[in-house]
Amino acid sequence: MSYCLPLPDLSHEGPSPEGAALFDLGKFFGQGSNPGASGTSGTSEGEAVSLSSVVAAYINTVENPFAYAPKATLCPLGKPWARKAGSLGDAEKSYVSQRQAKTNVALVEFLDLCNMKGFNASAFVSNISISRNLTIALAVSGGSYRTQFVGAGNLLATDNRYDRAKLDGLGGLMQASTYVTSLSGGSWLVGSLACNDWIPVNKIVDGTYKLWDVSTTFLAPRGLLNVLGNTITYADMILAIKSKLFAGFATSFVDVWGRLLSTQMFTDKKYGISFKWSDVTLLSLFVSHDMPFPIMVSAGRDPGTYVINTNSTVYEFSPYDFASWDPAINSLIDTPYLGSRVVGGTPVSCYQNFDNAGFMIGTSSSVFAVLLLDINKNTLIPKFIVNLINGVYTFLSLRQDVAIIPNPFRGVTNGNNAAIRQARDLNLVDGGVDGQNIPFSPLIHPARQVDIIFAYDNSADTKDHWPDGSAMVNTYLRQFSSVGRNIMFPPVPSNEDFLAQGLTQKQVFFGCYASELDYIVDAHKDLNIKDTDIPLIVYTPNRKYSYSSNTDTYQLQYPEEQRDAMIDNGFDIAANFVDSEFRKCVGCAIIRRTQERNGTPQSEECKACFDRYCWRGQAATSI
Image 1 (cartoon, rainbow, N blue to C red):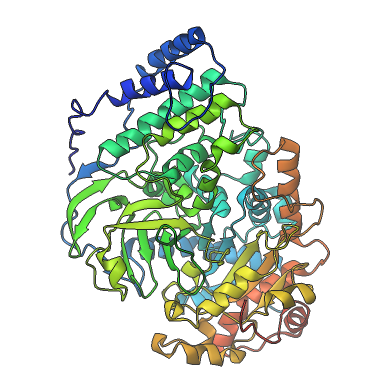
Image 2 (tube, rainbow, N blue to C red):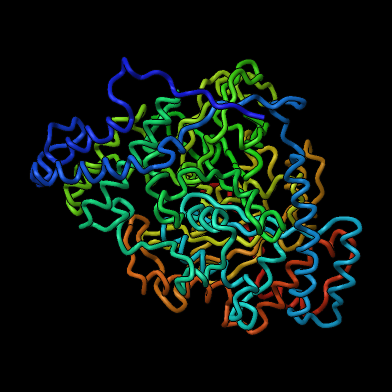
């Protein structure tokens, strides 16, 4: 049972949100000055009056103009507010258990297609299901639209719902995977798929689902020349953000960014304004456990500080839990109650509806909110769009690229960071700002028992916007710092050696031989882990195969042909057509940790695969 409190009486604070929106729209079109904008809009007074009238008529038809605002509710009873990290939450544990009943079936099918000599996939999976299921994860890096599209092709190559993936790619790997993680631009991909019931990428490409129209910039979602359409969209945004502000919550550029992103992530006319990240649990493929369990990643920082891999606090948000496993916090809470106020580790006022899906995706990718900081200097955007954006700024509490989240861990004593424990709010930023641009963190905690991670790296580390392995290096090195004491990652070379050894021009397996990982086990004695608990990594870097997919991170418009060419290149990279035995070698990698755990010798053909794909060498000592 829950209740909603009315918005505060704003009669002493000026016009209503609807009236304020129209008042500001009047300013946008020359009827007064806008404090955030300079110059004139170029729209006549008559046009402004006409536009405002149309927008007024539109707003009067809006069913719920406050759908974005958090709503007061009763606090949960009968269980601790914050649970100590170290074990999975009950909801995730239940989902994973039922998901793996599905992945085991898919794993048999996938391994059968790998054609490993003398290997009985059915018997193998039947045996492990008694003791410890094999857990596969997919991890999609950051990288703006580059990773959204190349990553889409990567994932499509693993999806057996697409006939070509079954014939030429790794079709079925997705269906055999328990987890999928993302950050930054990767969250545009994973977030939009998850929020749309895990639709197949090919159904977006063929137009069945009208998503990812990037032929126009997200700053003008209705097209650069559509004054009326964009005015209505921004009027909606003003109502949404102002309603959150009036409900007592701070707003920032990330709220604007999240609403703009939503115009490309959702197909309904209100662009998912009432859809929450926790609502993914209500979608049919999640309910049936036919979706890999999605987790997005963000980092924590204070405004004005610089975050690196050895001082960041990593946050993760699944549809069930908002958490940080880092020693600083070491806690998790229920995602639906994000936004609640906590004192002394106890909730004093609870809210729901804070976890708007667009806002959460925007939080994971907040680095792009900086594009809004210098909007007045952008000469490529029509002046009326600049004025609309500046008008939204009137309703921001903080003009920073941080997502402001009421601290759900305030007073919670599970972690060791007193500053976070005392903070009223958390400041979350893009998940890749600390250099860990592949979202490994959720997958390398012992509690999740991940055996193998397929990592898709679409970073832009080099001057030509290709990856150089830095994301791998940063996560590897983090585990030896004070903030990385509860993660475990196999050795990788320096980013210079990644390039010198050509490791960004092909798929590479890392951590192939558990017996060589004892020094990592020794570094984590407090975790009580074994060398076979450290996952094997299948690294797939972005590279030219059928198309030069090294586009600039801040390229914000793509013709449909370029979008589709990048998706095709991502498919081709992941499928690795140059090696007719690649699927077999992937199969060898998938089963290896279980074999090592059980003392099962590796076959000769799998040894040959490992000779071909496994890296063994000098591990990085610094980035």
